[in-house]
Image 1: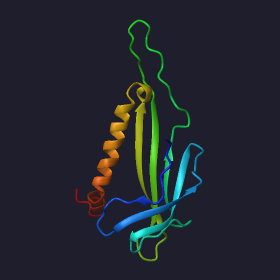
Image 2: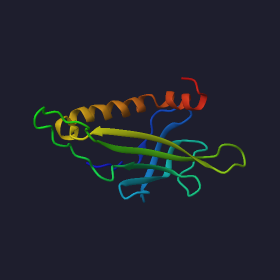
Image 3: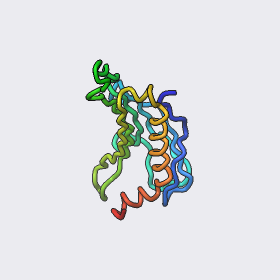
Image 4: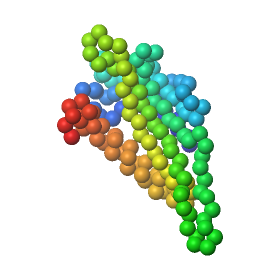
Length: 155
């Protein structure tokens, strides 16, 4: 299955939010190689949080490489492949937020970049699945701590 989040998205546990959910609607991605969803409604208790608007976006986008790279041929003598190309994918969440009173909202971003050596998608896809599972599992489990660190600067 391709990137197609179901709605509503259940938010991770984060201090200050109670049972957060995010209703999303398909949006137009800034690139033909991406999919984007806008947050159109909030669930749970999220006092002060806004849904997507033009001046305060709240969107989630996923991008694939414009050209998918494949594994080149190995050296016929040594069997070694030099310079294995990488396929780079990006997951970007954007959220408009006002930096101070009477200020124009600015866009905060989270970007996760996934770099996959060409060929591993067919030779060892289980390794890629495990990597992605661990990464997002850690992010989900540590969401409140990550939010605290981003807000307080204390690691």
